[in-house]
Image 1: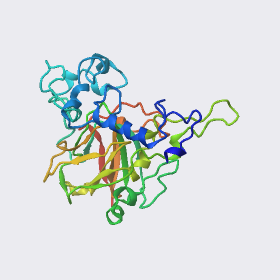
Image 2 (image 1 turned 180 degrees about the horizontal axis):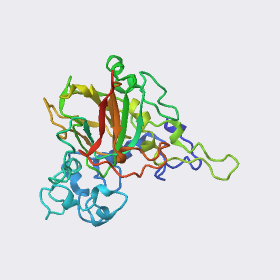
Image 3 (image 1 turned 120 degrees about the horizontal axis):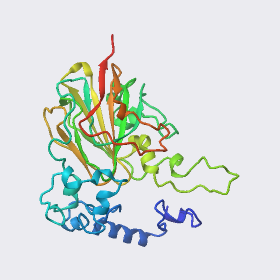
Image 4 (image 1 turned 180 degrees about the vertical axis):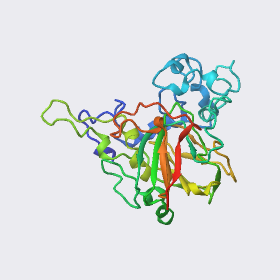
Length: 342
């Protein structure tokens, strides 16, 4: 596989314009560096629960809570950090965080993310602090998820054809979490799981060729196809069917809403998906989290209800070329579910 990577431009560099890897020793040395060094701000090295991983969570230059990071408009999840998030010690250069993972799974300050319409069972709360990606109706048991439209194939996505059949004809809402964002999940409705959530093993960094390179360049122009640095974000419909993911089924207290499925998806290298062991939960309760990196999720509703999304939960660009839409705040009103008349 490594020797098959082309050596000529533009293929000799990865999407971040770093040199490609062509041999096993370089690959192993790179992996060793990744797992033993903390990630600086805007880097993509994975470090989780090791003590020295907090070295990059610092107010010093290059740190994830530095002035540069908090003022970066490209990463609004870090803005006004002390006013936004709970920290163990605001006077400390690390804000009191002991590990990278503790920083990454931080919590909002009390009152910043109130639960929308708590007394209205038909109002669905946003599961995550996440940017809308796609809404698909009339879901099919099996579909071509690798094609341009990236349709959802329920059987592949849920990994259980019997459970998937219950959502045929239903609606899927997908949104993604940026790396700088809040990464805990919250219940969309009050209810219980019908069974313990499960994890489905899957791919890492898998992307359809459609997004790996720009396919729309005029062949008569001097511009050549080049790696797409945003391919992982634009491939979310596809990775919902193939990446490592956690799946849970919620039975709402309001049975008229029907069964709801949650699919929590690791993007690119992300694979740490944690559901809390819960009995009954209320709408807006914390139910799990991702560990490290950008992630995605899908909320699936059955065919007996109509999902009416809030205006800020409607994806602005269905071609997935522009993904800079503001995130829907966690626990805010994602939309409403209305039972269809029999």
